Length: 348
Image 1 (spheres, rainbow, N blue to C red):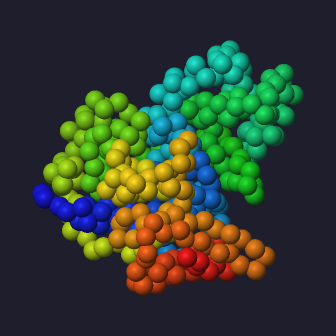
Image 2 (cartoon, rainbow, N blue to C red):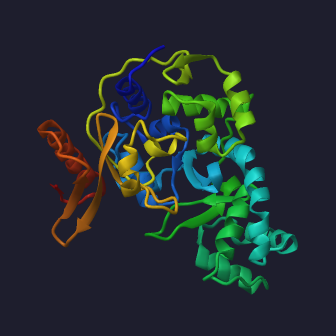
């Protein structure tokens, strides 16, 4: 089916729930397949822009979602019932690809196995911070340099092995819990990789196997096999699930947080972001700045400036914004403040 660039952006924005927010956290998590969550504040904002009525503590307190290292060895937030089968897809691959770096950090296979046995005992019935875990391991004769990357790589390896996942944050400090104690559900599909591809297309609307590979980190051959297992229709230069409605109204203005999934699901972002402005959004090192979305296209960046009295949401547009766009962004700033429990004002 022939679609204009505006059509594709509208379909993708709708798939991302940017034009029709969900009512609860689990619905958001299910509709997005996975939410990148190496930054807890950014993950909260990804939920905020796609939901109605939630506040930031709702995201932190919920046991309906869970976080672990999945796509591209990156921390993601997913429905709790999906974490086990997703970890079976990504955990072994992530553990194997990280072996060289673990060796460089002194995390030998023997040391890791010893540490996993001690972690099982340390975390039983508890949620511990990294510092608490390191102190516990040290008392058992396993000493790691807290200033090095070794603790992070050991914890990620333990998660890849299915031992633990992230628990609730304590302030800005993450905690870690035993996976078997945190999650009891396991909704494993018959064909996990094809199911992941289906969920990916549900979340990203129109895409290619190459896009799926960029998002998941899977080799292209496996991505093509997963696409071949689905009932797809051509849409623009990509494919959509056969049941996808390939018409959608323009997306209202939105404030996207850092690392938002809207920008992370495609190999090529040119349809969403003018290449001339790309470095203002991605300055390097994998960092994706908070962005302003107008008609499904990135129209600027933003940041928050906090004082004792209020929070200024400062927008730096790539070009002049229309009055209707500004009005829509004023509503977004109001909702941003409501979500965080702050008085927020728009500054352009």
